[in-house]
Image (cartoon, rainbow, N blue to C red; front, side, top):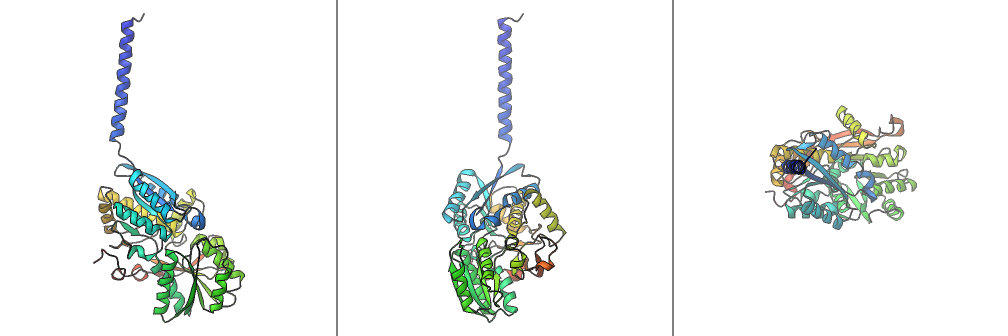
Length: 407
């Protein structure tokens, strides 16, 4: 029979054991390093929604490829839709950096949003890696010591696609331009390429983002009698303008469309009968080689859709960032950026890439032509490779960028 003293003793022992367990748990929690938080911010809805789907899954793949941890810390992903609005993008970035402890933001499609977030990142001294924004100003006047421009930019798109079309006889241009920072920069850079090659720019018209009816703009382009109609837009705007140009019979009448920023997902939306013959520039294509095919198989197990250079870009930028954190032994932004510039970029999209002082990743770019239906073996077989342009030829020279801190 248990006495009162025995019961009290047993209770004290149980309490002591419980407190010890709580103490050990607290110690274990204190010894467990906080997760490394990284964010992907994009226009996940609206005009660019179809392009950006799958970027979170691509980021997860990069984390898997470094073993799930960096410096003994798990890696946590935050994602948000900036709705292609600069004020929303900068507000998200500020909260992520200040409140949530995010150390790096990638994605950042839509140049106006990217430029707004760049200002916040510079103010905080933290890292932003643009994979979706195109304005070459991000490695020019708006460059940052803790910022990078990863996949493509308006200068490269202009020089790879623009030069190829001018050399092929397309020496007169008229532009359909998205009326914001990206479209303006792309029209500016392509116009310079055309003029430098001895061609003429006959005019242009600017349209609002997310335009549904391009008829008035296309009629102006048609009336210009230019050989090339340059589409300085992207996403659903590009798809709509190409489809409606087909309805107007513009290509059949002899003018050519230049898709200055076109993605594999756009081509699939358009279908080969509509898009065939279109010349475009991409940094990645799923069917380039055995490595790209194997990576795409892994990706499609997570997100069953064709990856674009945007999804591959988020994977690439995240992977290189995590490698640099590991090599630097810290998540301090300046130390990590120094390692990102020191280490060559090698992954499924980029071979021996170099992150320059101005934040521009110099890597090869590929010029493709969309296949005719008779050339395609299946629904994903959409491109034939015309040329691979080395990074030092595709991107603006460092000395010409007007990056304030580059001597």
